[in-house]
Length: 250
Image 1 (cartoon, rainbow, N blue to C red):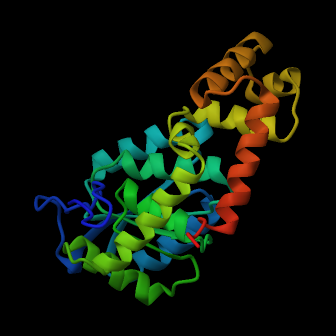
Image 2: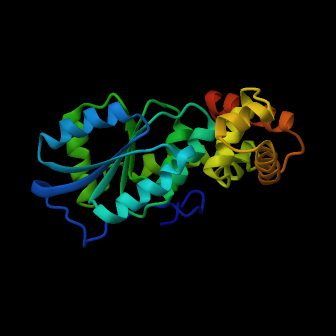
Image 3: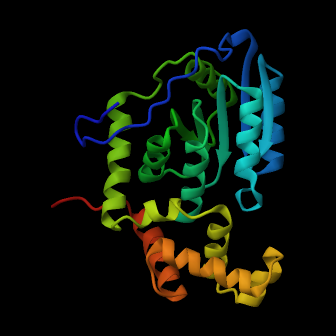
């Protein structure tokens, strides 16, 4: 589908009709970046009328590939992702996970930033909701999405995506370049932001210092920056802009 206002291609997912979407036996996958939260929500949904597969998502440990493997095995009617988005690096990780599976996603997150929601919608999510959404409403939304219903009005969807696109334009493509980092490279960037030395990063990651330096060089090359200091400053500025929201034309 093409946004008539921006001309951008919008990644609206249409559920595969081969997947089971009968609400009485709806199969779903619950993915969470917090194991205990995932287990609690999964148990609550399973006590109703959903067949729930579960996966804990830890992107730095190859968790995205493990989640995609489980999704391919289960072939659920819908996937529910519960995650926190604390910064631009994490947002890139979440968007990459959503983009990695072609089925319909519903995302619950604590972020209320329109640009964050727009990023996930552009990646292909059907719906992004607050993580305080009630269980009964979550169940209803999952069933509707699995049936192929458009639960988010098109105008609202396009508006959120436009805010994300405006945000990306403000930073000349840095958010897009962040999405090109591998899970390990995003972890290295996160350690760089916390001021960790190469030796400390090597110990944390369980690799040699030369491997860490290779990761740092790859991060800088993909972000088109010349130094670790520049990378940290750029991502911090991106997070400041992200929190403030896209600029409005006067």
